Image (cartoon, rainbow, N blue to C red; front, top):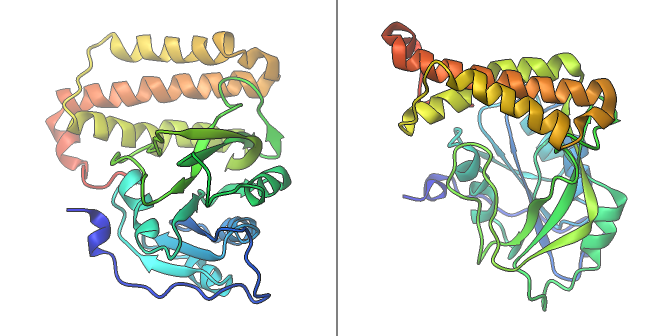
Length: 285
């Protein structure tokens, strides 16, 4: 069953108050959220520059996310979390328009991205999806290496032809005829270096370990060390993280910590029934 089949019916947003289309072909902007009150207004304001309809799919926020989203003119759909790909497919299933622009709550369109999208001839394009480069930030610092840029993400797509993969983490849209735009997104995923390491050592690694265990993947005593070493070398040396100084080293080190812990936790699930039984494998957020 398609998870979106169970989502509640919604009424599309009204056209912008100025009565003008943002692009020649209207676009629906979609965002998934959980406690994103600190991000949602800037995200929706960014989308509203090119989108005529805004849809937020919320998985149980306890802050003001939903109220703020509605105040920005978005339709809010209440949907318990289904995993990354299935959750991101809920909004497009309710969209009024064929073309969908999907952003995460901590992402923003740059002025260049807005201009590039407005110039697209979506009614006659041979492409079924468009990718933007993503600038990843720690605080207000753009990390230009370590595999963090250019980080092409396909976010504008024809929902009648494409959808996010049915993957519970790090899902993406795979287009048959994609186009890479000469424009950027901004991604404010880490407020500071401390958050970079907290996320890597906390929910990122734990979620990955649970998903790997459910898929039947297994580790041995050497696996955590090997993956940690490879992750650091790839980020710091081969992807030139050293060119970003402390930030580049921190990105490489956090990737190493994440790799080590997710395989160490996978090994722990294999070896320790008490730890395994205490874990909720249905909750991966």
